[in-house]
Amino acid sequence: MRQSDRLMTSPSQAPPTGMRLMRRAVVSKQCYSVSQYDDQIYVAGSGGVYRGTSNGQSSCVISVDGFVHSVSVNDGGIYTLVYERDTSWSVRVYDSDYRPTRSWRHIERSGHFNQMAVRKDSVLVSDRDSKTIIQYSLTGEVERRIPCPILNNTHTLNGYDIWMCVMSSRLDSVIVSCDGAVSCVHMSTGHCVWSTVSLDKPTAVCCDDADRVYVGVGLESDTIQISVLDGVTGKAVFKFYTRPNFILLHLYFID
Image 1: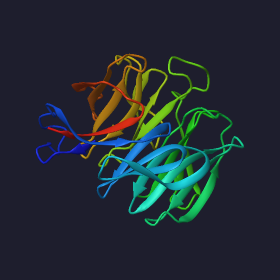
Image 2: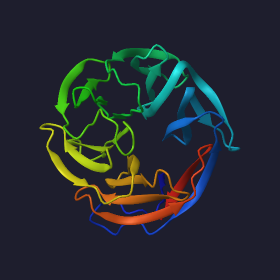
Image 3: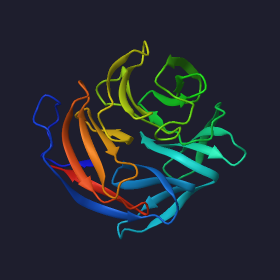
């Protein structure tokens, strides 16, 4: 999602009132997440990372032997969370020309869907086995393990899936969507700042520059709902409905 010029930049100001379709990118492979940087659309999917083109098509720019569960662009570096076919995880970083620059292993036994969150100074990846969020430096050193009891490694409503994002101005917090709840976790203590279980089958989460949290809701329904939460309180401030299509990725202006 991209902000429009009319989007307020403070969570204390009026929330957005609508969204309008900006661009549609066709992806032939199964896709897991999307990131936008410098007007480029990057899609994480089976077999690699795909870049959306201006005509709505896509091409594979990074190939892997496995599945890219998450992609995020930070200061020109393309960070990927890869699940390899030998059942191991790794974080791989590429430059703007899609050349590998560094990588490191992420130790977790589960092969179910997982995502990372990239900040300016670190990379966050969940570990369901130990119920922690591991904070790596941008070069792969483990800086700390953040206790996160809400992480679940047993089969639940949404399987074992975990989604995460970070807010631009609240660097002490991480948003986690897991087990039917969306929660804000304090990174220093692991304390749950707020949590909401009122959303129907919440899935993917992302944040904007005004620290609002966008949540995909309605995993198995014909019409998926995007709920917008206040990042400070966790309260819903806006809802938007769209018909899902797992081949098309839609980007919207927020009004």
